Picture 1 (cartoon, helix red, strand yellow):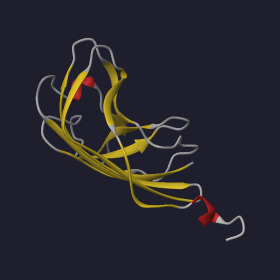
Picture 2: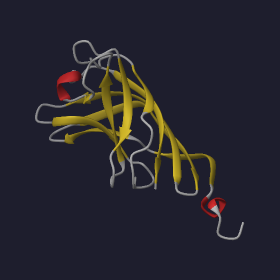
Picture 3: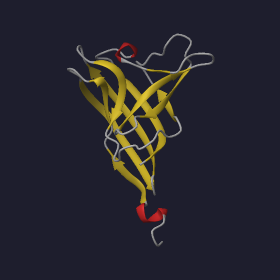
Length: 144
């Protein structure tokens, strides 16, 4: 296409391996029953989807929940993605849903709590219990 956006097109169904972690991983260990990531790249935009079913074990980990392993580094924040937290992930008081937000200049996304009239804030180690099965399904996009 003569230098157009489709010169950097990576077709659908391309997989990547998402990894659950924290800002400070500490001693985290994660056992996965499902660990799936898929993306499509069109020009400088990456569209992605994640399905994780896992059991995290930690005592010294701290900070924000993250999923790492994106196939590209984000150059700017995309539109907040959709996210469904299954079992074992709690929200802040009065938060009613979570979204995903990629980290600029990084290969990770965070889980962000939202709610009517509530401040938007990242979920942390305080919002998940060690050694209990958990799940996350998320999707979104970002600029490369």
